[in-house]
Image 1 (spheres, rainbow, N blue to C red):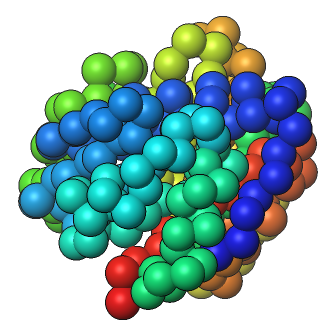
Image 2 (cartoon, rainbow, N blue to C red; image 1 turned 180 degrees about the horizontal axis):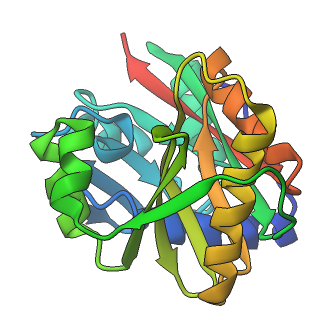
Amino acid sequence: MELIVVDPIRLSKVRQLEALSSRVWVAEDIFYDRTWVFRRTEDFLSRRLNSVTPLDPMDGENVEERIKRFSLSIPLRATPLVPPAVINYCQGTNWKKSVSIFVVLGKVCSSVQEECCVRVVKDMEYVTTLFKKQSFLALLRRVKCEKLHFLGEMGGIVFANMLVVCDGDFAGILDFSIRRNFDKENAKRGFITRVWSRLKEKNIAKVWLEVTRSRESLSLFQLLLDSSFQVSYSYEYAYWS
């Protein structure tokens, strides 16, 4: 793990996006040790819902004691808000970096391309049948903000899916997928711009999401680059080994 140095202005944006994401990824059990947040969700094997996240660069006291008390069994989530003392401790012990996540932010635009039908599904029970996970329905029930599920259709075929959580003038993308082998690029972008148009009707100005370095995630992110999306910051998971 490396120390992530971020200027104070960007840190305020990181804090804002971290607060937004905490209202989307709502863990079953949440514990606080000053500004460290410990999240556990036994029925959902997600790093985001089972990790410890320090949220103040100045809160670096008693690092070894606090980590051993709570987090040897769950990963440490190191955002730009992580205290330098935590990074130094991890570098000198058996903590190993696992995966990097990018948090990207973009403005909602509404240029329209190829015709496609975008349907809004409000029945979260139906959404769960698509994901085939009851634990996902439990997660959605814990989310208090408005949830919108968009389906893109063309020729009677559902080719795209986007699950969005609205919070103030922000929307977070909880899930986004394109049907494998669907090769109509204009329809893909048409789906995105029509979703943006629906969000603008709800006074949503910005959209954020988290992506990994995987080929699939980056290819989906490439679709969003045309919609002014940029990487806002990144974070890492580290495990005790």
